[in-house]
Length: 233
Image 1 (cartoon, one colour):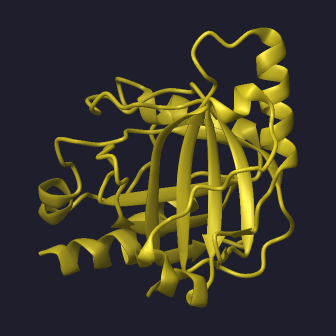
Image 2: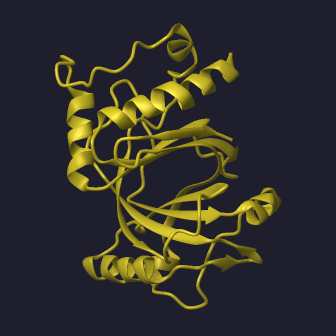
Image 3: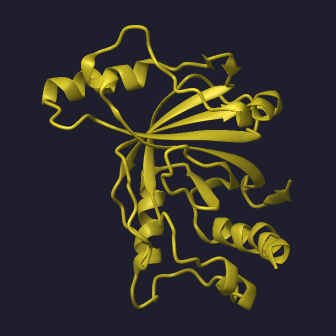
């Protein structure tokens, strides 16, 4: 059943979403590989859509959240396998985030990613927030504890809408995505090391790490112009 679900998601549903929503450049599917050691919830699967503009993402949410369904694209009919496996009781729902900074250009599709959700410390002042943001935007560790990442991307979550019926989730304000190539992905099971600074503002040192999960990429859908390619790994 899971194999049929994954095949449908990769070969039918993801390209269908990309085709019907102008502005999506790439779509990725990930599967949870290493959950947060502290027990924070991370969904089994993630679908990540990369947009060319913030406006495109906003339009997608408005169309998806339309209660009457009149604005929703004319997607292909959903088979029983989709409803049976794809809609579990626990979900992160629909989360949107804006890219703020990155360590450099992409070096190719990542084999795995480490997702780290972080927040300002409790009681942070405007000055604390300014110092926190500067550290978050300027510091891009590519080698941490002997583990070398290919790229680090920094995001800020934005409340553009939550999928109806989704379980409540601990959504932090900021997200760091550490991309790993095949060699790095192979050593990640030994333990994900928290990237820290030798010296940093107090607001950064007291930051709250909401969760840290490792996900393995299982498919990619690219839509350059009028054609698309979907590939399951």
